[in-house]
Amino acid sequence: MKAQDFISEVRKGNIDVVKHTEEVIKQVKKINKDYNYFNVVSEELALEQAKKVNKKGKLAGLPISVKDCICVKDVESRAGSKILSGYKPVFNATCIQRIIDEGGIIIGKTSQDEFGFGSFSVNVGTDFKIPRNPHDEERVTGGSSGGSAGITAKAEFPHVSIAESTGGSIANPAGFCGVKGITPTYGLVSRYGLIDYANSLDKIGVMSKYTEDCELVLDVIRGHDERDSTSLKEELKEGKIKKIALIKESLDVDNDVKEIILGKLKELKIKYDKVSLPLTFKYGIPAYYIIAMAEASTNLAKYSGMRYGLQEEIKGSFDEYFSNVRSSGFGKEAKRRIILGTFTRMAGYRDQYYLKAMKVRRLIIEEYNKLYKKYDLLISPTMPCIAPRFSDIVKLTPLKQYMMDVLTVGPNLAGLPHASFNAGFSKRMPVGVMFTANYLNEKKIIEIGKKF
Amino acid sequence: MKVDKELILNVAKNARLKLSEKEIDEFLPELKEILESFSKLDKVKTDKLEPAFHPINIKNVYREDKVEKSLSQEEALSNSKNKKDGYFKGPKAI
Image (cartoon, rainbow over all chains, first blue to last red; front, side, top):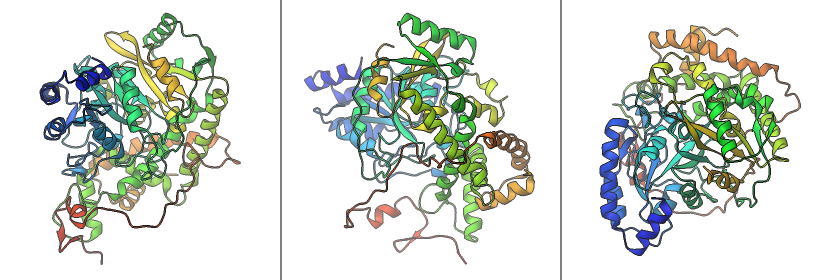
């Protein structure tokens, strides 16, 4: 059932929200045993919300799952990291507060790569479980919002997941799991209450089985928030799709992926020109990773085992104490990124790496801007392959893993709204197609998404 | 630039991380490979460009300087085991 239909039944009094929520929690726990989509199932909070649900709310009674990196009051929120063990926020993220005010029911915190540091949700923090693809348990969900995509695919109840993307973490798992995932324009949804990965790149977005459900929840969570200094005041732009283009370089992917996407575009009678984004495809990966790691290393400096999260008995100097807690609390990929990020900001290297990457980002933004003078939407595959097997991922060096983000880093570096929709299946595995629009043109993405 | 054990240890120290011998051995070739791929950017001409610190041009935001409701001391301390007399307790600084 679509969310809108469910909500109108709730409003009419045809659905008992408490009973429905109990049933949903039961199903979620059952799914979680095999697939590991949740770090926490927030049963107590969900039932408490169900009992006093606002039936007039835009999301009355609708089950909502939330990526672990988004703060939910009184529910352990760890961004998939051991270093945040036991952390229970004393406030709600702005997007969560808006959902609760409209009657949405928070069912739990979804699994992810630690702090978002990964493309397959295999870099979960020490002691966390790795989510499995809903179509094949031997394969990855994609990442970093892997748990959100997995539960969205598996849920047989109306549901929307609140996910987050820094370099592709919504589109990627949505593509690999065959669901819809929309990443909005940078600044459209407040980042207040988001456990930061990289401030100039992080965007909160939505996943669902239906475009209409993504639209409904995005409408609730978007809008200016004075507690986020990068939150936009502008409204979404009106306008219909007139011209679409396919990005030439993006077809350098596995053949099955290419065939399925071109076939689907033909089936839907979507007409397109072919265009080129040479700089984005050549330099997007290094520019993205330098910026993301530099910002991540500064954001992670605050985890020191004092005010919240993992704590040990206080002894030794502050250097020793902080180093001990951080060394046991961060997982391997977090350590890699802290070291690389710290290095690229250090005196002597800052111009060569960090500032250079910021200038290349300027070129990439300009390259997109030129195309949006003529086109409303750009098409590419979401990922270059179908969801890999766990046994294939372990063979890839970290760099090889980073390179899998080649299609998603462009729109994320430029802060452009983009979405993945399912174009079909290869060997029973979903293949995602990605649409990218100009700033604040989410309505065009939703318009095309309704065809899928 | 030479990426060696000494450099990694120096960066790790700056970042307050203690790495085991095993971690250093594993990271060294990985970080070399990654940094080498990053130097691809050297080839891009960017002389006249301003860095894009944000994807969208962001202006400074001001607000009225007035007192608003904030977390109570109790709430602010609620996630810490290390506290005393209403304050956080930390390791020795000197």
